[in-house]
Length: 615
Ligand code: DMJ
Image (cartoon, rainbow, N blue to C red):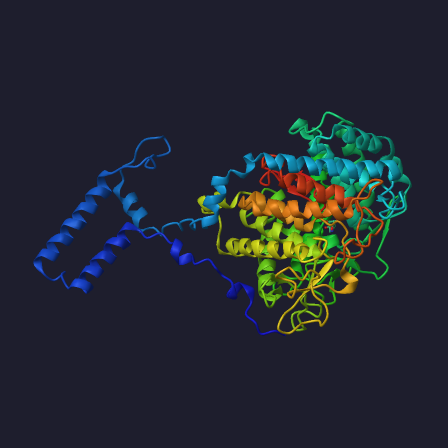
């Protein structure tokens, strides 16, 4: 194992001492001391006289001056000198760190007013329209479009997953015709499908179909029309009824298991459930259904969904962990983690995402029933910084690796594209959806938050470079990073003109791109939080690469086999998350911050926004 210093020690750029506020009393006593030591004057009579005058003046100020804060509860001004003295002696609050120079610049740019972003946002909307038209033409009602073969395929159990995943994106984009088509399909077919279909995966069905229905409910005016982004398609209650029917069947995954860890698969038609073939459930899967089940309980008035889902997190809280990090498998039979494989890529990722998002969903307060989730998240992120974060050579990209054999085994410098959700989650967890500027101004960021925010920005850069480094400008599914301990002869990032070509290693088996959203998701969150327009520029570059290499002439967009060659070999699949997530995040990235604000909504792991409960 590498002996290099952990990220948190090596890369702290925040010197908290420089933000510390000094009290007037401290200033005075320090001045006296300085006077005494430097000029040896305190013993002479003039010196003593000056000090006396100084003390007298300060005492007068304390007794006589008043400020707008000196009001009692009834609005009367108070003149209790003890209070003022107390205030002077009290440990002063830490002043917000000074903004980095580029932030002043960012404000001056007024990036939201630049019309080019409206034009770019329209291009994303056109791309969504194009993707939907291809799907509707060749695959309406199937889970996914195979754009090259021009037909549909049911890869997710046959619930028309693209229709439901795409629905709220169409609402957000104001594409009323698509809302009408997708909504009408849901109303006409989905209940029947749910009652007839066989096996589905609990997690995939929850995040894509249930999550999509719940967002559609909210955005179409559910909850007494608190928000209504569309006037087309069915009434909100239609979505709610379908969601309840689906969730009632999915609950069998929880009820059939002997522990609070649910089985991974459900047979919809008879509401039975069983474990995955190997017997294990994925940690990310069982811990990433809570946002959806909680919201369903809130709007249906039936607590059973939330109760079952939250039992999983309460149970995981009691299990042993490695600095907050958990193995990627968990047994529904024993309720214990299985194996030692720790990673933030597949099967691990959204466990960490939901810890902080469920806490935020429940109002983001300390000292309530959900605080344990925040604590678990903070501990896990410390663990990530200590055990999983390294820098590549020669150019020093910060990346998150894996511990396939636990913390005593060898470190693997492998990073799935899936890990690129992490920059966004880290930034969100740090500011709780406020802008960085606002959070700094209000002195809301503690040391952990600042470290996590810094890591978020570093990792977002790495995720972007995973695109920038290839010949197509699109990221591979998995990248390895060149370190002192690890290199692979004959393999590098693909594009020799990139300054990171030697830092990033792309193996032959990992060169595909599935139109995944994680990097643009993080660019969107980081843009909203930092207001740094570089995230928009990067998002635009990625969008252009999708347009250039994945658009299919006859309709839709396709996954690729190899991002390192031009033209790239193509696969024949348009994943549902391209419409549900990738294009939604790009659209929001180029648009106005007031649309789905991050302090009022949490996005589930499939990018379906659910409102935060403000109680
Ligand atoms: C999505 O289905 C979800 O984001 C999930 O959490 C992981 N990956 C895919 C998209 O890449």
